[in-house]
Length: 291
Ligand code: UTP
Image (cartoon, rainbow, N blue to C red; front, side, top):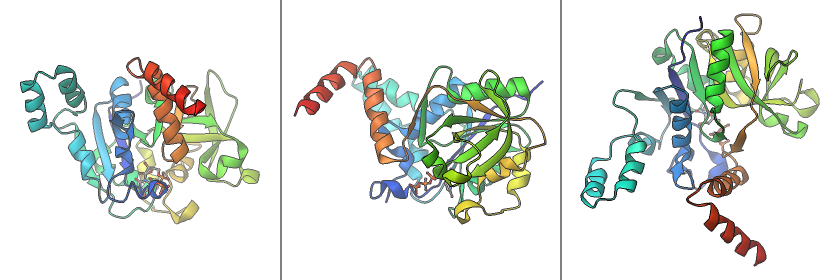
């Protein structure tokens, strides 16, 4: 039987250059979609999948992330005193249980693979999830929940993929796969940021992974790949031919909040989706489109 996935690594040490100047003093993952920061969506996605332990791999200027998931004693005491129950709940919901989150620093932004490697001692010898919080996914069951279910079935590593236009392959890790069955396909090749003419397919990795701990051994080598960075995709590629390794086609909604337009789209889409903001947002958009 597959080992249960209990832990998630949230790499949040990137420089966020596409969001300067917003990210000069504040982490990209604290950018707000409607009323909650990106990082909270990722944590909630994990909790819904039964994953309750988190390691945040952070860098400089990331203190706000740690504070966000802490108990905000003064704020909550004041809200309680003022009988602001709904607001109090919003704050309490953004807390991670004591002892269930740790924060470690990547020190140098050497790449996503290196960021995951920085969490190695905490991961130990069990399967673990990785979520890139600037990719926002919305679905029930959650994207990471779907990967966990696939891992339970195969006992191996599973990465989420989506089709992208061929001209965009150079922004993603791209998977070559065998025939797909129920959205799941064995991976035969993985390449990070290939040029469109060299890409083995248009199936892009979208920042959601369930990985066997063997990947850490490959990351130990600190080999650099595309862009001179230590790439997670390359370490996963070294597992091809070993324990089961599958791509799961994710069919839900996904927003690339690491880009300005994707971030704007996420804000509008989620505001239109939520019962408390839908009507007002629709009216607002109508007014703006007319003007
Ligand atoms: P990105 O490729 O989006 O890079 O990283 P970035 O630095 O965050 O943003 P831009 O491109 O400069 O605007 C994908 C994910 O990997 C993490 C990032 O925090 C993000 O979640 N990452 C990347 C690290 O944790 N460390 C790294 O060295 C690189």
